[in-house]
Structure formats: structure tokens, C-alpha cells
Length: 277
Image 1 (spheres, one colour):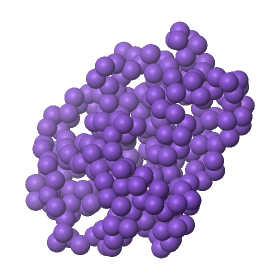
Image 2 (cartoon, rainbow, N blue to C red):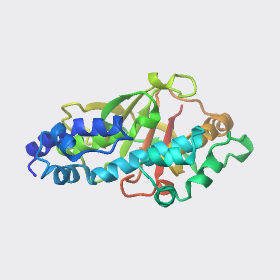
Image 3 (cartoon, rainbow, N blue to C red):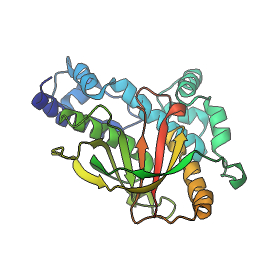
């Protein structure tokens, strides 16, 4: 696919990704999605898979499983309601799919995750203080609950690939400006994107964001994205006071080391970066 053609198709797919993100409980209709993308229904799925690296059904399942995990740990919705919202009429099918995604069945996940965090149970995480190199990002803005940023990453990667910005060692980055414990979810500000060459020409909806070279405390976390409250709490409640360091005047950012499209949630690796001075 030629670069200009790929970019044109990527721009068309943006409306599809927005619809999927805002209608996670709806079953996507081929003709409606094809209409949003201004494509023939006969060819829509092939173009989507070529641009996104996965099928529409795979995208929808990832969104729904993420929402299911949040509901299990943070709401009192019944298992049947959670399974139904995830698109499963059978509890057994939901249990199998959830278990494959998160490494444990949904009932056990709820038992383990739904209780308050006990400081005595917070495990130590691998952490190092290192010189983080200056990094240029191509990003999209996200406003709202950090748990809803996933589809923005999908759009950002699609647009970056269409513009030829991706390089072999590119990794995903998220930048988080506000403390979700202090700022209402609807007012949270963040960026979703990927690393690009410093001299990259970034256009369209993507914007340039620079992470300056500096010292960072880097915590390596393995597990689902929606469970990062525990390493964050350990970092600020236990490690930082004992470190003798102070946070620098720059927001938290995260570096994602593997692909959520092909990696089980329990095996996802994230570098949580706290700039320090």
C-alpha cells in the first residue's frame, strides 16, 4: 500500500475507531462501519486488518475485556451483567475468554482485585534510577478517565504508521499530567503516542511532544494496564520517601514494552517513569 493511500485510509478509519470506542457494548455492523470509512463492505475488513494489525472483532474484544476487568474490580455488577456487556451470552464462554486474557477466571479476579489495597501487602517492584535519553513522541491528546486511553493509542499508532513515522525500535508512550486521586476523571489530561526520530515530520492530527533528557526513577511493572494503581502507590508511598530524591517539574510518563494486541494482559510490561532531581 502506497504511503499516501495508506494515510488516506487511516484518516477514514479514525471515525470507525471513535465509534468502536464509544459503543463498546454494541455489536459492530459491517455495513455501518464500512459507511463510516467510506469503503465498500466487501473490502472493509481487509483494509481494517491491514492498517490495525488485527480484526474488528479482536479490537472489540480487547476493549470489552478491559471494561470487564474494571467492572469486576470497581463495581458490584453481577457476573452475568459483566459477561453480557462483554458480549457473552454464556458465562462459561466469558470465563474462558477472560481467563485467557488475564491469566485467571473472572470470579477469582474479582476476589483478588475488588478489596482495598492493604499497604502491608504491597510488593516491592523492580526500580532503578537512570539517565533517560531525550525522546521525541508523535502523540494524540486524550481528555478523561485514563482507563479510556486505549483506543487513542490505537488511533495514534495507526496514523503514525500511515505517515511512515514508525521505526524498528519504536515503543508506545503515555504521558499523564494529572493525579487521578485528586483530579475528577472527566478533567484528566494525557497523551498517547509512540517514539519517533527527532527530525520526523509530524502532521495531521498527530502532534510532537518532547521528553527531555534527565534523571528518572523507572519502575518496571508486569501485568494488566488497569492495575497500575498498586505500583504507583508503592512508588510514591514507600520508595520515594526513602530514596532521598524529589520529583522534577515534569509529568509522569509510561513506556510500553510489548504489544497488547498479541500479549496476554498478565504479561504486559510497562516502565513507569518518574522524573526526579
